[in-house]
Length: 194
Image (cartoon, rainbow, N blue to C red; front, side, top):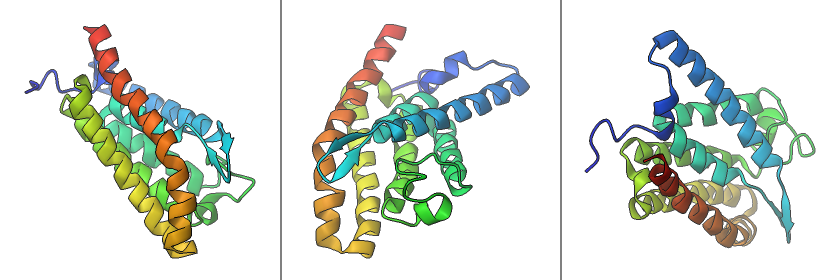
């Protein structure tokens, strides 16, 4: 069982002790995290009828590094930026911006990012990032929760069969690969850190 000092998220070791400097750095990290989320959303790999991106991997990695509070704050800030009309999402501005885009076919997945960040950040805060098995279980849980929200919302818009065919099936293998990269990478980084 991880001790309290070992159960801090990865990023905690670089945060300054001074409260003001710590808050300023956390704000900077959250803004940098939203930039990474935007870049990962815009990194498209076209495979069939849907575009793949690196966003789920980025959400998992940020939550693993930042922990629950900062990871969740980063994802929420990203969604606020998108709701405000900034073209931060995968197909924005081509397919709309702001709340209109968020209420479209990807709305459930965007909400799922919040749940994903919460689950992975919670696991990170408990030191699970040091164990491939524990961390892998947390990542699988987060992925299933995110996909369930995405599927549920998409099913309301286009029907369950099409939502499954176009909103879940094409993402199973790519998301499993991204999940495996994070599940293996985070414990490896902890080992390197010593």
